Image (cartoon, rainbow, N blue to C red; front, side, top):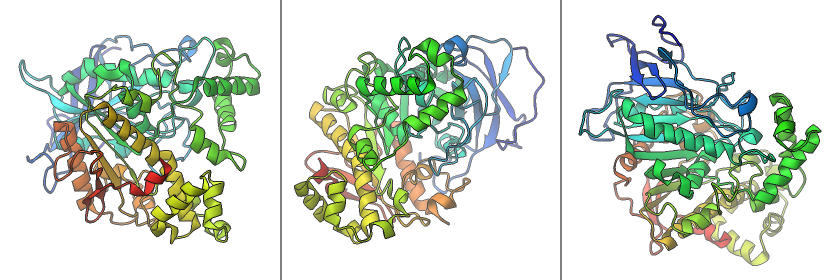
Length: 524
């Protein structure tokens, strides 16, 4: 790529009008990239105790791998070949998400195009540290979306407010759905996982040029992204790539090889092709997405219970190569034991999926509702006793809480127990309990804008209602910054231990309680 004249700032980013030039250039191992300065939001009280950076630079759509098309489709990612001249990094690059499935309330736009494996870097100091100096700590964010949707191009994932507080921020893309995780005879397994690994290798090799410290990388994500960082925590092959983990509403998949192959053969049959590379490469992207959607649809009276018992059909697979055992088993074996971990969930992740169900469920006895949901009678009795307050709100809320507990909280508590048994570095557990002004409870995705401190961002009212509490965002974001900087969220938040099971409860006001997930324990 030859050097081109300086372009005008893109409409997607507000440039810093006070800067001598709105542009800034950095050398990566593959070539030079041009980013753009823009102002940060000045804090009332900076999370790091300083004045905070007044501006930061955004480098968008830097490819870390070649486009996964043609012979590279369904193959392991290939590092991006070097280019000549300066590559503009002023706009988000193509996303693996096609269209907007609308599976979450996070604005996650799709960008058309083939080169879907890229990173976005946000930094307050796009300069390599001087010899002997230490770079800034780094946050790497992996988006969610059930492993089949989502986009790193969300305005909520903009790293400007982490930059303000002295943290370089990177968001990464990866192949989704069948392209990223489907079983294909002769193709490498876990292609989406391999994308995570190559993106993290890119961070290790390049982040110092953007002012970051490759020896202080925290990986974080929400929902499937939270599951991704927990999967990486339990993966031997990934241990050199990060130094701390922050998992928000993590949903691990741990798909068994048998289920993965069964789905792959089903999809191939519905496409009318052989279940191998030649067969799947003969099918266009749109047709594969159509069949993938049909093959993974939740249909029938037992579909939800099957999902809760067996897990997702598409996602990281126990392949015997990258993932040699389940995440919980890996953590129990001591993998990732040296990495500090923060993890938690919202109180009612999936209650909003049952907002139209109150009338339908109104006359169903609670004992029958829990039995139909897969709980044995003694467990159902104990669970109901532990969740009387939510049960008073009606059957729909009770069922929403049960789905939340089975899908998110029970697996999370098993992961915490596994780490404790192995003797690990610090683990901090939280609950996000502040009720949305729209829904009246703490639903899935609600804590993400508090983590990024972006309550002034777009599409906030549908998720959080009007005027969500900035003081709570200040508190949660500051704890996240402290964890990324120091490996400890600080404040009066004790490490989790089996003796106290200390849990920070984010609400107005926030508190620290003993055994904040006691209501989930009947399911364990």
